Image (cartoon, rainbow, N blue to C red; front, side, top):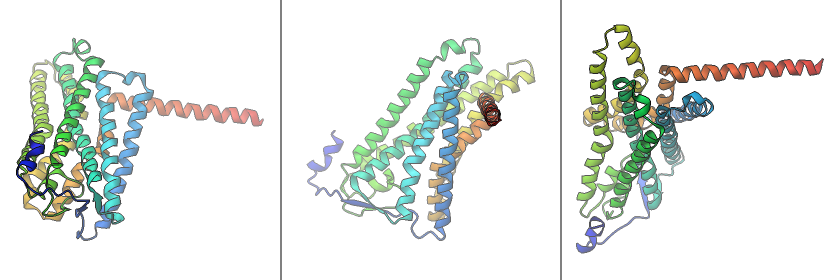
Length: 330
């Protein structure tokens, strides 16, 4: 609360604009093709994640604690892509670049909380794999439904809290320099840099948030896999090692999809053209939501078996219906 009242004590004229202007993709040549690509990504993301939701809900074999985290990941992917892509397309396709102040903060909240939850949810899946490999005999006792639900709920509260603090600190910024946000959405960093009063708290949370929701989760995941590899090295036969490690390939694919693009942007973002950088940033926000269900379904044996079983049931149902109709016609 002390941060939120700083500007009052400094006698700074507080300016809260009626609108912000999102400049993001303006001026990029042939950007209409990229909008079509974003629309394609969104459709595939919604369809793919919806299919995984239906599979998990219909198959009782997929009610283990692990699939609580998988279900939450699918929900987050749907949530994040629906929060970001339709609004971005509306802004730039239909020239709705002016966004009301409160709408902009709401847009930021939903985007940041869902994108933060994507990386935190991978920590839950990493912990599940760690227990399954290290304590195979005690896995069911340690990884219970209650524990996984509590872990996912804690990550949601943590993500929402960090985002609320970021949004709350923006409400104390006096926007007297400009209202043009140089991003493709209402981004925290480009927004607080428009302020003309003390933005030290905003700068602090802007530096702390990526550490808490990106780098610490990544470090935990990497350390957990170092421990997994060490444990697998003690298994006597190569065949058993490969069999155990195959249970981790789906999760490793998700980690690569979610973190490698972000690492690339952080390492090389300053050396590439600003237009290329903003496109890369937007792709890191939307591609994981599309690729997560595709890669996970392809590499998770339980989901593949469930999908085959559901397709087989549907096929038998159609055959039975067709035979019944033929008998009735006869």
